[in-house]
Image 1 (cartoon, rainbow, N blue to C red):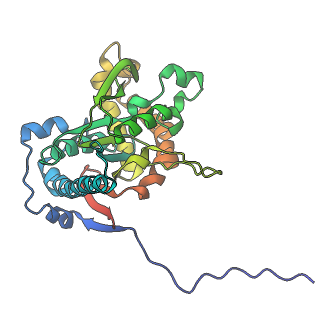
Image 2 (tube, one colour):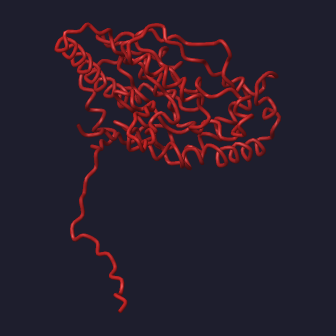
Image 3 (cartoon, rainbow, N blue to C red):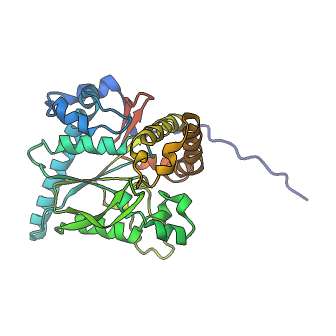
Length: 325
């Protein structure tokens, strides 16, 4: 006798839970309290990106409250480190507080990182703030070509993960004069022999596409670290993909009229495109490469962030999601 299959019943209860507390822009702006505006207009201008122009209002409403919050986190981490060292009867060197900033190509990660660096450096208990982009850890173009993944540049497999992890481990261990390679957007390649040096900062901001990815769980239980394991706080910059596509196309067109015109630029060939040709080319690059990377690797990590900045089409932050403690 064959027993008929009984469809699985849904539970009569629904668990409603979000790990985030969501703030509207006015609600978040009020959390600035009496935090002073420490940047002048002349200091704000260089912080902007090519198309995401940062305003004093955005800094006052969004980034000053965030810098105040981060100051609490850094102070608490510094005290915990000192208390733990005293408990263990050891004298450990300074351990930098590391902030990860993730998000899609063209979403404004670099602008956010520069603004945070400028603001955090004005707090007296952590004046030394460094900024490193993981772009410098991309594999050289010749290696990507040899492996047949040049069209997946920016995907996780296109990075020198071993070198990136060693850099993160050295910084987190408090080692001095740790070097990170430099990437040239002009050459569209890592610059051989060029490095930035990180020497025991109070705060290090690490900006990159895939920095919030978790490591794959090993079958034998051995540790497999990933970049996100070294973060004390993490931020994800979010906008709808159709909006980011528009930003990417606009940025491509701006570069076509400026940087691409230099004869030795990697993308010099695009400087001769018509307006319509540039739009079609940028749209194709976005959808064939950057959209896929966003969907497959970047967006799935959003919920791992401690804080999410949700931006509208004008690059203004509309809501802030802060992970509950």
